[in-house]
Image (cartoon, rainbow over all chains, first blue to last red; front, side, top):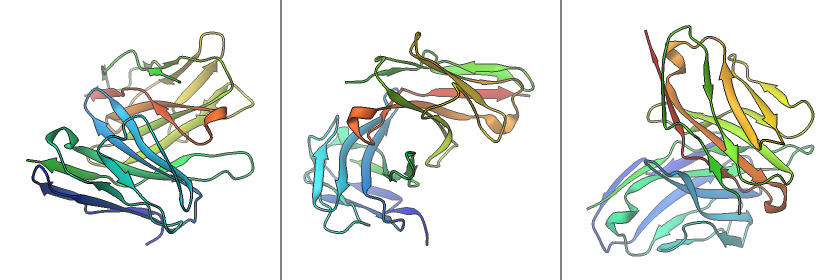
Length: 114
Length: 114
């Protein structure tokens, strides 16, 4: 499927478990992003990547790990899930084309940590 | 670092009435500005953007926003809303020095009543 996809769409896990959220885009965009959405906070940037093998922290990186070995994939791992990481997670990608840019978002993953 | 303030967390309005959703950002340096819309249980979709040129930008479904540099604002307006406009609206800013990174406001829930 063309576009940006996330899996799983829904996940329930327990405190202390490792969880990996997947993100895949078919446009070969250079930039990819992970956000979390919580009531009253809008979207907050967790990590971003400007290209394969280049990643950097966003506003709320603690407790998360990312990697980007291939341009099209940008997995987000919660090494030891905590209840405060219950949230909706969105992946996005973007590129500069003719001096313009916009971020395209995936459908989101709703994660519940019990 | 940039910050974005959406002054109203909820805006109830009757169908066919005009609406304005307010957005202010923190810095007057060169920025790109965006409005995204999120329908229930979906990801974010770009509604409109300001990158350069005319300070008034329009979307295909009747929304418009005006970039006001002196007031550091990017308010979203629609002269006559429909039930189908019920959604969460997010204002976002990208600082040109920060590449493609976006900073989001907390969101405004537009509730259109019949």
